[in-house]
Amino acid sequence: MVAAQTSVITPNENLVLEGIPPIPATLAETVNRYTNFRSASLSSWHPVRREMLISTRFADTPQVHLLKFPLGSRQQMTFFPERVGGGSFQPTQGDYFIFSKDIGGNEFNQNYRYDLATGDITLLTDGKSKNSRGIWSNDGDRMIYTSTRRTGKDNDFYIIDPKNTQSDRLLAQVEGGGWMPLDWSPDDRQMLAMEYVSVNESYLWLVDTNSGEKKLITPKGGTEKVSYGGGLFSRDGKGLYVITDRDSDWYLMAKDEGHGFSKKQNIDFQFYATVMFVKEYLLK
Image 1 (cartoon, rainbow, N blue to C red):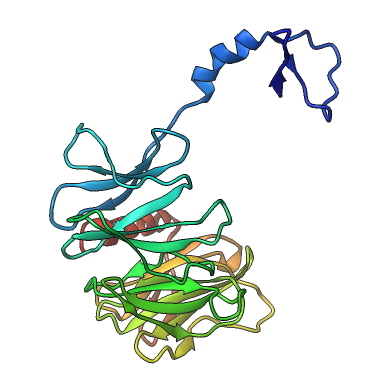
Image 2: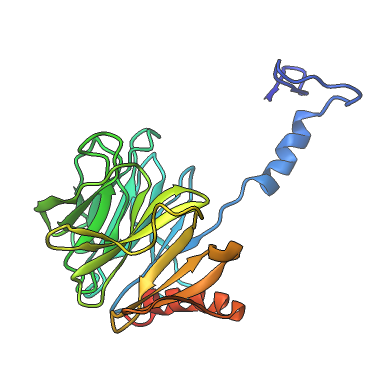
């Protein structure tokens, strides 16, 4: 809708208004303060200092900001016309963080390294394909992310040491665009991955982080379609915690080595969220 010279809001041509009185442009200007607001979300805790990265905006698009103490002033770190998809500190020393963004709204996200000491920004991906930001290894020396670089449509897995752009390499080829990394095993030798087919169907895989060999760990080809809503390794690396709708409801499922999946009580659904939080923010 646009304001006409008569200072009345004029509807677009595709709208038909019946019985609605003219709306003064001054009224729209008055309510704008209530409809134009910003929020902030936590992106990453610093692994050593009591600092965090948050995503918020001062202008038109969300950018990465650094917050060094409670109630402190936010320091804007990125300045792009495009929105920046949060940031993730290097998880052992925190001397840089990784963020992702597209170019001109094309939704082909690229990954970048931001060096805190210098403010330098380094492109980590090819600048053309569609990439996910990825997940950190426990040692903080590698990230696994997905990219359509090979075919333009398949979300293959790539692995990189963000401090060395030349280390970027294809880890495992896949078919389809629904693949995503979920978690590294405690010894960093395996990755838990999801193959998303639809809201009702997905599969979990283990991927060797050196060879890229894939192993399906959830049934495939049966009459019942099952969906999995994420997952993570247990601390000893011998089991997994996942969310699944198997048996027509969402449950927390624990997979012990050699014993398959077992259903936990419904009250443990909240426990899954707690485990994810503890692993990401307290135990690393």
